[in-house]
Amino acid sequence: MSIGIVACGALATHISEIVSDNGLDVVIYPLPPLLHNRPEKIAGEVDALLHEIKEKHSSCAVAYADCGTYGALDTVIAAHGVKRLGGNHCYDIFAGAKRIEELMASDAGTYFLTDFLVKSFHRSVIVELGLHKRPELRDDYFKNYSRVIWLAQQPTDELKSLALAAAQEIDLPLEVEYVGYGQLSEQVKALLSN
Image (cartoon, rainbow, N blue to C red; front, top):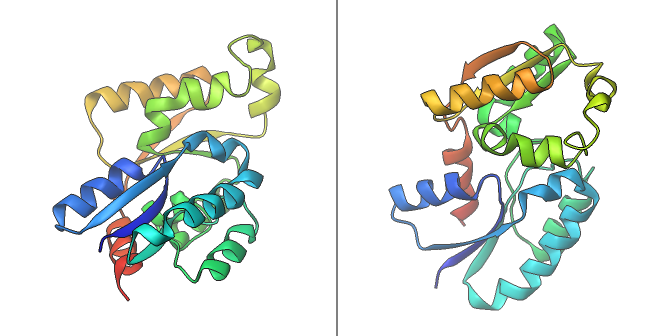
């Protein structure tokens, strides 16, 4: 039987590519990426989906880091006896926790983007914060940030333009760090091992 993975919608496409490249028998169940704007709901949504799919698969796993649940997701993971991705957030997975710590130590006012956030910035950030209706609030929301770092997984000219536009939209300078998939591939394979 296949393995069921409850996945963050922001990672689902990357995970699908990893699964396909490795010929793995996996069914991915993505949850809406906008849950990151309400992290207190992530654990409950993961729990409900695990209950729904666990009888359909030989085993299940969760492709989320903690993602701001402050341990609530780990309570769900323990209750279901499954594994999840490591780290506090996907930035740790892509760039490595040590590198994220270094970047934050050098400038605590760092706003991170991933490829997913670059593609969805307007919807995920601007619309969700209501800045499309109240653009004058931008400086209040972002006054404590001093730079944007795009942790680029698969940079293209189009994504570079979108990343620059996102940074300009919140009036911050853009820096780019090419990280590729970082630890995601290894972590997904570890999730699928017994």
